[in-house]
Image 1 (cartoon, rainbow, N blue to C red):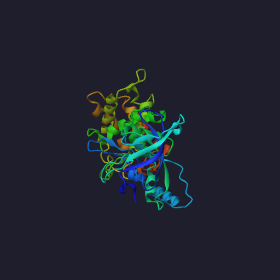
Image 2: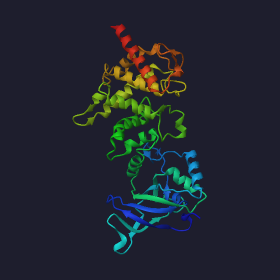
Image 3: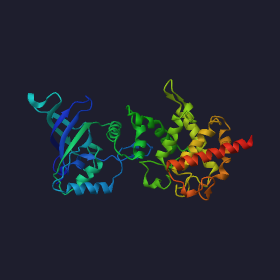
Image 4: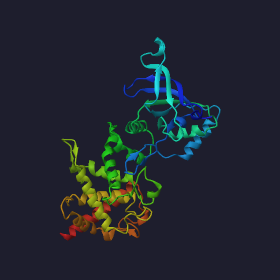
Length: 380
Protein backbone atom coordinates (compact mmCIF):
# COMPACT_ATOMS: atom_id res chain seq x y z
CA UNK A 1 0.00 0.00 0.00
CA UNK A 2 1.38 3.49 -0.84
CA UNK A 3 3.03 5.29 2.05
CA UNK A 4 0.65 8.26 1.85
CA UNK A 5 -2.30 6.07 2.81
CA UNK A 6 -0.73 4.67 5.99
CA UNK A 7 1.14 7.53 7.67
CA UNK A 8 1.26 11.31 7.94
CA UNK A 9 5.00 11.54 7.60
CA UNK A 10 7.84 9.51 6.17
CA UNK A 11 11.16 9.07 8.01
CA UNK A 12 14.28 7.71 6.37
CA UNK A 13 17.89 7.32 7.42
CA UNK A 14 19.85 9.97 5.54
CA UNK A 15 23.20 11.65 5.11
CA UNK A 16 23.31 15.44 5.17
CA UNK A 17 26.07 17.06 3.10
CA UNK A 18 26.66 20.77 3.72
CA UNK A 19 27.70 22.04 0.29
CA UNK A 20 25.80 25.34 0.60
CA UNK A 21 24.57 26.49 3.97
CA UNK A 22 21.20 27.73 2.74
CA UNK A 23 20.44 24.59 0.75
CA UNK A 24 21.36 21.38 2.63
CA UNK A 25 21.80 18.29 0.49
CA UNK A 26 20.49 14.87 1.55
CA UNK A 27 21.21 11.33 0.38
CA UNK A 28 18.63 8.67 1.26
CA UNK A 29 16.41 5.94 -0.23
CA UNK A 30 12.71 5.60 -1.04
CA UNK A 31 10.65 2.66 -2.17
CA UNK A 32 9.49 2.70 -5.79
CA UNK A 33 5.86 3.24 -4.74
CA UNK A 34 6.76 6.15 -2.42
CA UNK A 35 8.38 8.53 -4.90
CA UNK A 36 5.21 9.97 -6.45
CA UNK A 37 3.56 10.01 -3.02
CA UNK A 38 6.27 12.45 -1.95
CA UNK A 39 7.09 14.34 -5.15
CA UNK A 40 5.24 16.19 -7.90
CA UNK A 41 6.31 16.41 -11.52
CA UNK A 42 6.33 20.12 -12.36
CA UNK A 43 5.64 20.25 -16.10
CA UNK A 44 6.20 23.41 -18.11
CA UNK A 45 3.07 25.52 -18.53
CA UNK A 46 1.93 29.11 -18.14
CA UNK A 47 -0.57 30.68 -15.79
CA UNK A 48 -3.43 32.96 -16.82
CA UNK A 49 -1.10 35.96 -16.77
CA UNK A 50 1.30 34.22 -19.16
CA UNK A 51 3.99 33.61 -16.55
CA UNK A 52 6.05 30.45 -16.89
CA UNK A 53 5.45 27.79 -14.25
CA UNK A 54 7.14 24.42 -13.90
CA UNK A 55 10.21 23.15 -15.69
CA UNK A 56 9.85 19.49 -16.68
CA UNK A 57 9.66 17.99 -20.15
CA UNK A 58 6.49 16.10 -21.24
CA UNK A 59 6.21 12.42 -20.45
CA UNK A 60 7.94 10.13 -22.97
CA UNK A 61 5.93 6.91 -23.15
CA UNK A 62 8.45 4.69 -24.96
CA UNK A 63 11.29 5.59 -22.62
CA UNK A 64 9.11 4.88 -19.59
CA UNK A 65 8.07 1.47 -20.94
CA UNK A 66 11.72 0.54 -21.47
CA UNK A 67 12.55 1.44 -17.86
CA UNK A 68 9.56 -0.55 -16.56
CA UNK A 69 10.65 -3.62 -18.53
CA UNK A 70 14.14 -3.32 -17.06
CA UNK A 71 12.92 -2.81 -13.48
CA UNK A 72 10.65 -5.85 -13.69
CA UNK A 73 13.78 -7.93 -14.27
CA UNK A 74 14.86 -9.48 -10.99
CA UNK A 75 18.53 -8.49 -11.49
CA UNK A 76 17.88 -4.81 -12.21
CA UNK A 77 20.42 -2.35 -10.78
CA UNK A 78 19.27 1.28 -10.45
CA UNK A 79 22.34 3.35 -9.43
CA UNK A 80 21.27 6.77 -10.77
CA UNK A 81 19.46 8.76 -8.09
CA UNK A 82 16.21 10.65 -8.48
CA UNK A 83 16.94 14.32 -7.71
CA UNK A 84 14.30 16.11 -5.65
CA UNK A 85 13.77 19.68 -4.49
CA UNK A 86 12.38 19.36 -0.96
CA UNK A 87 10.07 21.75 0.81
CA UNK A 88 11.49 23.38 3.91
CA UNK A 89 8.80 21.46 5.78
CA UNK A 90 11.14 18.46 5.64
CA UNK A 91 13.26 18.21 8.80
CA UNK A 92 16.59 16.54 9.45
CA UNK A 93 17.74 15.39 12.90
CA UNK A 94 21.34 14.26 13.22
CA UNK A 95 22.24 11.11 15.09
CA UNK A 96 23.78 11.43 18.54
CA UNK A 97 27.38 10.70 19.29
CA UNK A 98 30.78 11.58 17.82
CA UNK A 99 30.39 9.07 14.98
CA UNK A 100 27.47 10.92 13.39
CA UNK A 101 29.71 13.04 11.18
CA UNK A 102 33.09 12.72 9.50
CA UNK A 103 33.59 16.32 8.37
CA UNK A 104 31.98 15.67 5.01
CA UNK A 105 28.57 14.26 5.89
CA UNK A 106 26.37 13.84 8.94
CA UNK A 107 24.16 10.79 9.53
CA UNK A 108 20.66 11.20 10.86
CA UNK A 109 16.95 10.91 10.14
CA UNK A 110 15.08 12.91 7.51
CA UNK A 111 11.35 13.35 8.14
CA UNK A 112 9.17 14.32 5.18
CA UNK A 113 5.53 15.31 5.84
CA UNK A 114 3.07 13.50 3.57
CA UNK A 115 0.18 15.46 2.06
CA UNK A 116 -3.51 14.93 2.52
CA UNK A 117 -5.37 14.00 -0.70
CA UNK A 118 -5.50 16.93 -3.10
CA UNK A 119 -2.91 18.95 -1.18
CA UNK A 120 0.54 20.01 -2.49
CA UNK A 121 3.30 17.45 -2.11
CA UNK A 122 6.47 18.30 -0.17
CA UNK A 123 8.89 17.68 -3.05
CA UNK A 124 9.36 18.24 -6.78
CA UNK A 125 11.30 16.13 -9.24
CA UNK A 126 14.24 18.06 -10.65
CA UNK A 127 15.81 15.14 -12.52
CA UNK A 128 14.44 11.65 -13.14
CA UNK A 129 10.88 12.37 -14.23
CA UNK A 130 10.64 9.41 -16.60
CA UNK A 131 12.33 7.08 -14.09
CA UNK A 132 9.97 8.17 -11.32
CA UNK A 133 6.91 7.41 -13.45
CA UNK A 134 8.36 4.02 -14.41
CA UNK A 135 9.11 3.22 -10.77
CA UNK A 136 5.52 4.03 -9.82
CA UNK A 137 4.33 1.50 -12.42
CA UNK A 138 6.80 -1.30 -11.84
CA UNK A 139 5.71 -4.62 -10.35
CA UNK A 140 8.44 -4.29 -7.73
CA UNK A 141 6.69 -1.79 -5.46
CA UNK A 142 9.26 -2.13 -2.65
CA UNK A 143 12.30 -1.64 -4.91
CA UNK A 144 14.78 0.66 -3.07
CA UNK A 145 15.63 3.80 -5.04
CA UNK A 146 18.55 6.17 -4.31
CA UNK A 147 17.47 9.78 -3.88
CA UNK A 148 19.45 13.02 -3.77
CA UNK A 149 17.47 15.98 -2.45
CA UNK A 150 18.13 19.62 -1.68
CA UNK A 151 15.86 21.99 0.24
CA UNK A 152 14.40 24.69 -2.01
CA UNK A 153 10.91 26.16 -1.98
CA UNK A 154 11.82 28.54 -4.85
CA UNK A 155 10.80 27.41 -8.33
CA UNK A 156 13.56 29.61 -9.75
CA UNK A 157 16.20 27.62 -7.86
CA UNK A 158 14.59 24.37 -8.98
CA UNK A 159 14.70 25.52 -12.63
CA UNK A 160 18.31 26.58 -12.22
CA UNK A 161 19.30 23.13 -10.94
CA UNK A 162 17.20 21.41 -13.61
CA UNK A 163 19.09 23.23 -16.39
CA UNK A 164 22.48 22.56 -14.83
CA UNK A 165 21.79 18.88 -14.20
CA UNK A 166 20.63 18.44 -17.80
CA UNK A 167 23.22 20.76 -19.40
CA UNK A 168 25.16 17.88 -20.99
CA UNK A 169 22.15 15.69 -21.75
CA UNK A 170 19.89 15.75 -24.82
CA UNK A 171 17.16 17.95 -23.36
CA UNK A 172 14.72 19.26 -25.96
CA UNK A 173 16.15 22.59 -27.15
CA UNK A 174 12.72 24.18 -26.98
CA UNK A 175 12.39 23.36 -23.29
CA UNK A 176 15.81 24.80 -22.47
CA UNK A 177 15.06 27.84 -24.61
CA UNK A 178 11.86 28.63 -22.74
CA UNK A 179 13.34 28.09 -19.27
CA UNK A 180 16.46 30.26 -19.72
CA UNK A 181 14.83 33.70 -19.19
CA UNK A 182 13.44 32.48 -15.85
CA UNK A 183 16.85 31.62 -14.37
CA UNK A 184 18.48 34.48 -12.43
CA UNK A 185 21.75 32.89 -11.34
CA UNK A 186 24.91 32.82 -13.51
CA UNK A 187 24.70 30.22 -16.25
CA UNK A 188 27.32 28.25 -18.20
CA UNK A 189 28.53 30.34 -21.17
CA UNK A 190 26.78 28.12 -23.72
CA UNK A 191 23.41 28.71 -22.04
CA UNK A 192 24.03 32.33 -21.06
CA UNK A 193 24.49 33.32 -24.72
CA UNK A 194 20.95 32.11 -25.48
CA UNK A 195 19.23 33.79 -22.54
CA UNK A 196 18.60 37.22 -24.11
CA UNK A 197 17.40 35.85 -27.49
CA UNK A 198 15.11 33.46 -25.63
CA UNK A 199 13.63 36.30 -23.57
CA UNK A 200 13.05 38.31 -26.76
CA UNK A 201 11.39 35.28 -28.35
CA UNK A 202 9.11 35.10 -25.32
CA UNK A 203 8.00 38.71 -25.81
CA UNK A 204 7.42 38.15 -29.53
CA UNK A 205 5.10 35.28 -28.67
CA UNK A 206 3.21 36.83 -25.75
CA UNK A 207 2.90 40.54 -26.56
CA UNK A 208 -0.40 41.14 -28.36
CA UNK A 209 1.25 43.95 -30.36
CA UNK A 210 3.73 41.48 -31.85
CA UNK A 211 3.21 40.20 -35.40
CA UNK A 212 4.21 36.76 -34.07
CA UNK A 213 1.75 36.81 -31.16
CA UNK A 214 0.70 33.25 -30.40
CA UNK A 215 2.46 31.88 -33.49
CA UNK A 216 5.58 30.52 -31.76
CA UNK A 217 5.51 26.93 -30.49
CA UNK A 218 7.07 26.61 -27.04
CA UNK A 219 7.37 23.77 -24.55
CA UNK A 220 4.48 25.28 -22.56
CA UNK A 221 2.14 25.68 -25.55
CA UNK A 222 -1.23 24.20 -24.61
CA UNK A 223 -3.20 21.92 -26.92
CA UNK A 224 -5.84 24.57 -27.61
CA UNK A 225 -3.13 26.96 -28.90
CA UNK A 226 -0.98 24.38 -30.65
CA UNK A 227 -2.81 24.57 -33.99
CA UNK A 228 -2.03 28.30 -34.29
CA UNK A 229 1.57 28.00 -33.06
CA UNK A 230 3.32 27.30 -36.37
CA UNK A 231 6.85 28.68 -35.80
CA UNK A 232 9.43 26.66 -33.86
CA UNK A 233 10.81 28.75 -31.00
CA UNK A 234 14.41 27.58 -31.41
CA UNK A 235 14.43 28.96 -34.95
CA UNK A 236 13.31 32.39 -33.73
CA UNK A 237 15.98 32.28 -31.02
CA UNK A 238 18.64 31.33 -33.60
CA UNK A 239 17.49 34.14 -35.91
CA UNK A 240 17.70 36.74 -33.12
CA UNK A 241 20.98 35.35 -31.76
CA UNK A 242 22.68 35.51 -35.17
CA UNK A 243 21.70 39.15 -35.64
CA UNK A 244 22.70 40.09 -32.08
CA UNK A 245 26.12 38.47 -32.12
CA UNK A 246 27.32 39.13 -35.67
CA UNK A 247 28.92 42.53 -36.25
CA UNK A 248 26.97 42.72 -39.52
CA UNK A 249 23.65 41.99 -37.81
CA UNK A 250 21.08 44.78 -37.60
CA UNK A 251 20.54 44.08 -33.88
CA UNK A 252 24.25 44.17 -33.01
CA UNK A 253 24.39 48.01 -32.64
CA UNK A 254 21.79 47.81 -29.85
CA UNK A 255 24.46 46.22 -27.63
CA UNK A 256 26.88 48.47 -25.74
CA UNK A 257 29.83 46.09 -25.31
CA UNK A 258 31.82 48.57 -23.22
CA UNK A 259 29.08 49.00 -20.62
CA UNK A 260 27.68 45.50 -21.03
CA UNK A 261 24.23 46.97 -21.70
CA UNK A 262 21.60 46.09 -24.30
CA UNK A 263 18.73 48.25 -25.58
CA UNK A 264 16.01 45.60 -25.45
CA UNK A 265 13.23 48.09 -26.16
CA UNK A 266 15.02 49.13 -29.34
CA UNK A 267 15.56 45.51 -30.38
CA UNK A 268 11.90 44.63 -29.83
CA UNK A 269 10.77 47.70 -31.79
CA UNK A 270 13.02 46.65 -34.68
CA UNK A 271 11.74 43.06 -34.61
CA UNK A 272 8.09 44.09 -34.34
CA UNK A 273 8.43 46.60 -37.19
CA UNK A 274 10.29 44.31 -39.60
CA UNK A 275 8.22 41.17 -39.07
CA UNK A 276 4.97 43.15 -39.22
CA UNK A 277 6.12 44.31 -42.66
CA UNK A 278 6.86 40.69 -43.64
CA UNK A 279 3.35 39.72 -42.57
CA UNK A 280 1.83 42.59 -44.57
CA UNK A 281 3.83 41.90 -47.75
CA UNK A 282 3.17 38.12 -47.65
CA UNK A 283 -0.35 37.83 -46.14
CA UNK A 284 -1.17 34.58 -47.98
CA UNK A 285 1.91 32.86 -46.54
CA UNK A 286 1.72 34.25 -43.01
CA UNK A 287 0.44 32.23 -40.04
CA UNK A 288 0.15 28.92 -41.89
CA UNK A 289 1.81 25.63 -40.88
CA UNK A 290 5.25 25.06 -42.39
CA UNK A 291 3.74 22.25 -44.48
CA UNK A 292 1.64 24.89 -46.26
CA UNK A 293 4.00 27.86 -46.15
CA UNK A 294 7.79 27.84 -46.23
CA UNK A 295 7.76 31.40 -44.89
CA UNK A 296 6.79 29.94 -41.50
CA UNK A 297 9.31 27.12 -41.94
CA UNK A 298 12.70 27.13 -40.23
CA UNK A 299 14.41 27.93 -43.53
CA UNK A 300 12.02 30.80 -44.21
CA UNK A 301 12.42 32.43 -40.79
CA UNK A 302 16.22 32.13 -40.85
CA UNK A 303 16.49 33.44 -44.43
CA UNK A 304 14.13 36.35 -43.87
CA UNK A 305 16.08 37.07 -40.68
CA UNK A 306 19.26 37.44 -42.68
CA UNK A 307 17.45 39.68 -45.12
CA UNK A 308 16.33 41.71 -42.08
CA UNK A 309 19.98 42.47 -41.38
CA UNK A 310 20.30 43.96 -44.87
CA UNK A 311 17.03 45.91 -44.86
CA UNK A 312 17.38 47.35 -41.35
CA UNK A 313 21.00 48.15 -42.12
CA UNK A 314 19.54 50.75 -44.50
CA UNK A 315 16.18 51.62 -42.93
CA UNK A 316 16.13 52.99 -39.38
CA UNK A 317 13.14 51.25 -37.73
CA UNK A 318 12.79 54.15 -35.29
CA UNK A 319 11.72 56.65 -37.95
CA UNK A 320 7.99 57.39 -38.31
CA UNK A 321 7.79 56.14 -41.90
CA UNK A 322 9.83 52.97 -41.25
CA UNK A 323 6.90 50.49 -41.53
CA UNK A 324 5.95 51.72 -44.99
CA UNK A 325 9.57 51.97 -46.13
CA UNK A 326 10.33 48.41 -45.04
CA UNK A 327 7.25 47.16 -46.87
CA UNK A 328 8.50 48.89 -50.02
CA UNK A 329 11.90 47.20 -49.65
CA UNK A 330 10.33 43.77 -49.16
CA UNK A 331 8.02 44.35 -52.11
CA UNK A 332 11.13 44.29 -54.32
CA UNK A 333 11.54 40.54 -53.72
CA UNK A 334 7.88 39.58 -53.34
CA UNK A 335 7.25 38.70 -57.04
CA UNK A 336 10.09 36.18 -56.93
CA UNK A 337 9.14 34.38 -53.70
CA UNK A 338 7.55 30.94 -53.78
CA UNK A 339 6.46 30.41 -50.20
CA UNK A 340 3.29 28.40 -50.87
CA UNK A 341 3.49 27.19 -54.47
CA UNK A 342 5.68 27.12 -57.58
CA UNK A 343 9.42 26.72 -58.04
CA UNK A 344 12.20 29.00 -56.81
CA UNK A 345 14.05 30.35 -59.83
CA UNK A 346 17.83 29.81 -59.67
CA UNK A 347 17.44 27.33 -56.81
CA UNK A 348 15.70 24.67 -58.90
CA UNK A 349 13.57 23.67 -55.89
CA UNK A 350 9.83 23.50 -55.59
CA UNK A 351 8.41 25.54 -52.71
CA UNK A 352 7.90 22.47 -50.50
CA UNK A 353 11.32 20.98 -51.27
CA UNK A 354 13.03 23.62 -49.10
CA UNK A 355 14.17 21.82 -45.95
CA UNK A 356 15.61 22.88 -42.60
CA UNK A 357 19.18 21.90 -43.47
CA UNK A 358 22.19 24.26 -43.54
CA UNK A 359 22.60 24.01 -47.32
CA UNK A 360 19.00 25.00 -48.09
CA UNK A 361 18.99 27.79 -45.49
CA UNK A 362 22.22 29.19 -46.92
CA UNK A 363 21.04 28.91 -50.54
CA UNK A 364 17.67 30.51 -49.81
CA UNK A 365 19.29 33.30 -47.76
CA UNK A 366 21.76 34.09 -50.52
CA UNK A 367 19.00 34.00 -53.14
CA UNK A 368 16.77 36.45 -51.25
CA UNK A 369 19.64 38.83 -50.50
CA UNK A 370 20.80 38.69 -54.12
CA UNK A 371 17.27 39.42 -55.37
CA UNK A 372 17.02 42.34 -52.97
CA UNK A 373 20.39 43.88 -53.87
CA UNK A 374 19.83 43.48 -57.62
CA UNK A 375 16.36 45.04 -57.39
CA UNK A 376 17.72 48.02 -55.46
CA UNK A 377 20.55 48.43 -57.94
CA UNK A 378 18.03 48.63 -60.81
CA UNK A 379 16.24 51.50 -59.05
CA UNK A 380 19.36 53.65 -58.82
